[in-house]
Amino acid sequence: MTDHVPALAGAVTIPDPILLVGIGASAGGLEPISEFLASVPPNCGMAFVVIQHLDPRYKGMLPELLQRVTPMRVLEITDGMKLEPNCVYVIPPNKGLGFANGALRLMVPPEPPGKRLPIDHFFIELANEWRERAIGVILSGMGAMARRGWRRSRRRAA
Image 1 (cartoon, rainbow, N blue to C red):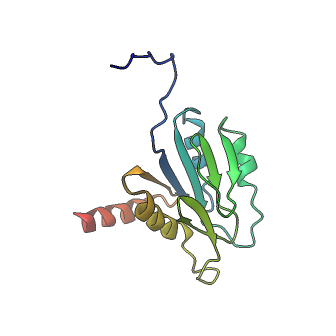
Image 2 (cartoon, rainbow, N blue to C red):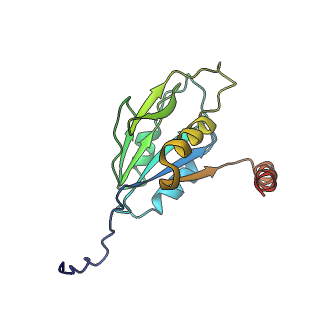
Image 3 (tube, rainbow, N blue to C red):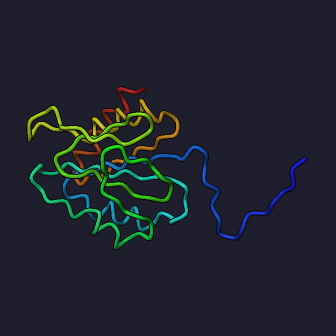
C-alpha cells in the first residue's frame, strides 16, 4: 500500500503524458491569443503551440509580445525542439510545423505564399500525432463568416 500525499494548495498535477493545445489564429489574432494565454494558470501542465496565418516575410515578434501576458516561458520553435509542460511555443515566420519522434519539426511550406494554410496543416499533424492528448483552439476575427464556417463544419460532422 502506498502512502497518500496530499496535494499542495494551488498545485496542479502534471498529466503524464502532457496535453498539447494547438492555438490557430488569423494575422489579427494577437489580442485574442494574449487574452487566452493571460487567463491560463501558469502551472496547468499543458504545452501550447501558437500558429498564425502571417505574411512569410513578416519579422516575428510574437514570442516577445506573448511573454508580456503570461508567466509561462514563451519560445520560438526550433527544429527538433521537445515539448515541455507550462510553456508556449510559437512557429517562426515562413515555416510549416509537424512532429517526428515526439519532437516539433519545422518544414519548408510546400505551397506558394498566399496559398499556405499552416494552421490547417498543423492541426492535421496534431490530431495524427497526439490524438486524445490534443486540444485545438481556433481564434478567428472573421465574425459572422467564422460562425457560418463553424456551423457548416458541424453539419458535415453530424
